[in-house]
Image (tube, rainbow, N blue to C red):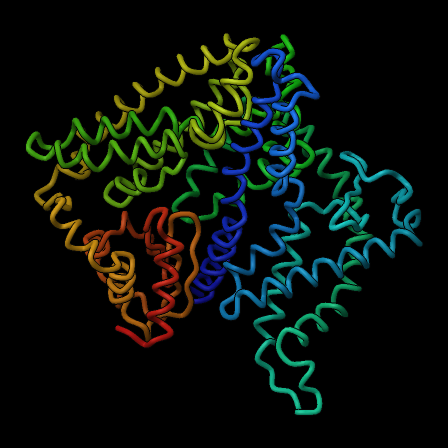
Length: 528
């Protein structure tokens, strides 16, 4: 039973990590879209930003390019998921997934063009938002969004794992490898497309009802959503919470991110309260705990450390807090206290939910899922400040009050419960000196980290597979008893370790894609 549970958890975590591969693009291109919208706003920039000027035309062109990842989200997921899901020949798996997803949509289009009324679909309608139809690579088809893309990509990767290495007679050599995978996918997509034509229109009606329910849930719904998004971080399952809201149809067609950017000019020009214009934005306030909670946590860790350790602790936690505030990457800071005092993480999630719910109750809404650079500055505060400054003033005041609450609660719990957070015990708090850095810079630091992590994980023979998400190296091992202690991983540069049976997550940081590449090189070359 335990083995079965571990396998399920490993697969779920692997799937969650794989979904983050395409999601990484959204934050960057969201900033590009927001800046281009800002630069074509005549209310802010005056006549230079009027339609038809050279300035406007330049930024319009930039904006159209920046919309790419949002207008092609299903394709991005169909191609991007195999990078994290496929255990071998990832590049070929991406091509296979793309072809099978396109085949699926051609089948759906053909079926509905003939039998649309039988499935309750008016296929003569224009494929616009709210119609239930969309265009995928010039194909008019059902709007299955990222859900359909993720499902088809998962099926494609499964076929890839089963069929890619199947031996064929020499006379049938043309059907080997990717050809066999795509041919199998071709025939499998026909019944799946038919099933989607039957089921998906009803699912769209259910989604519409869910949207109304979640929005009507108000403050309570925002609290539950934000709490779950935070509390599931250690398991890696938080992706399954926010993706349907931010990039899927859970509360608004095409997701909060796209909807907000599409209506940014409209919101900026309106004097109506934002809560009336976009109440669904309450489900994108989970980034507030990153902006306002993490500084309070960092201060608490600093002031509860032994006086002689505070300089070292400050050098660790304050940069981590700055990254959380600016970029929305919280894991280095959160995992600093998660492993030594899990109760603090539960409290952190409770406070995060309470902060979002409080802001929402006071009229704050928008697109605040990331850090200041990603959301507040370019997508909210700057473009909307002229007509909505009272809302943002409320947001900042409430946020700073909660920074104090985070500090007070964490400091109290650490001292009252005598929690051994960094700097409070007798263990060494080590920081690399400039000389250390220069010495290591002569070689490949990331390769050294990868080799150390491989040894800490029990060596090459103990590794089943490896993938990564934004900051974590996700590894499945054969025998988790061979793992080194979390302190050993940290000594080799990790921010922490998640040990859930044979499903292991090494918290590496933003360099994790490069570390994974070197890790896989070591596996292939038989090192360690």
